[in-house]
Image (cartoon, rainbow, N blue to C red; front, side, top):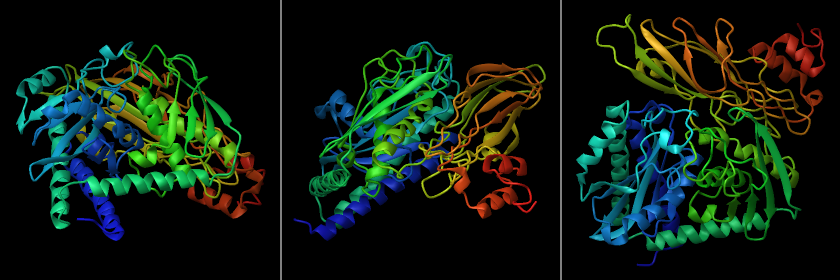
Length: 555
């Protein structure tokens, strides 16, 4: 049967709803707090050639855009002749999945009326995958945990119990990890059920016609958006960030063509010795995201709408790390990529993109082991916590406070974190004066204080940036506040790496603020007064940043 364009549009929207329900099923069933509380996941539906047709709104660009490429790897390595109904495939290969071992991607083929019609795939971040644990300290990917090749988690509905036993014995949180694997498989099953309902409702045999409609219209709309851009000479931009032991320079050159945009990361520093390197698939994911949100934000994300955004980088650059480079904290560098791309875009499309922000998630993982003062039966515990600094100010609006841009990951509630292990969060609040001054102010970072209950020894694995290189303002805006980390006795701590915390001590954290946009002298005085009343700005800082007196501010 031939479908009308109205029916095809209805089914396109229906597919987006299907994968959103798929993602919500994963949130409801996941064991890891990073998925259940923070939404660090992705979900999508693919045609039988492995082309992504729709993605869930819930999820991160690093997962979704990287996962857009991963299903083709599954098809090639499993082999079309070995794809059976009720199969479930799995991998955490950084170069064929989403960039590091702590993300597990599960792909399931969908059959309808006995015929293979497509795939569902999903990705979730898991708390532990063995090895050194989540952090930047490894010298190669071999130290970072168990690497699962593309393989069958289940064949024709039967789970590979030998595989499950091997995984269980190699990780610190076996129940949590295996539970998450089953949750990933279940969420694909939910997507499959809803898709079959849709195919039956519209009396369709498969996804060929609706898939062709989606891909054709998405590609055409994206090309039209690119052609509508003003003609511009190529533009370059670079940004220096903390790195592990030494600073890292990220550099990009953007070139506008009639049918594509090229982002070339030549000039970016080489791979680091420690685990902050980025596989190219993750660089592509966040560079494409930055270009798409600036140029074609209304077009749904799929293989065709991403295709006109081309991303290249020299092999061996920190944004094109090859095996066996350590890549556990690829997100710390990868989340900076949109800010670099925006810097070049600002030269080509003025007053379009925001100022630099915190960018990288302000993550840490605490590893707790019971000592002689621990309660009877106490067990070691691993707790991962996601937090956010401030986003950069926008051309017409202030930056968002404590908001994870570009990842979109939610901050984990303190209650959920403390429930997961013997960790105690004694302070978590917005950080006044951390948003960069400007006509539009940068978003605020946060203060946090973290310790553990008596009877546990604590190792703190920091995953922070913007310590020495805070976010820079745009068009005259001021920089955001820098990251700070140390102990309550004044002992400084490093922004990255696993560090022992003496018993009884508390880790003090100040997460970075976003930078300002535009000249601070152009800010509306009433907005400055509002910020002082809300506690976003101290009176002293308001006078310093905006050249006003206390009398002018009504204080």
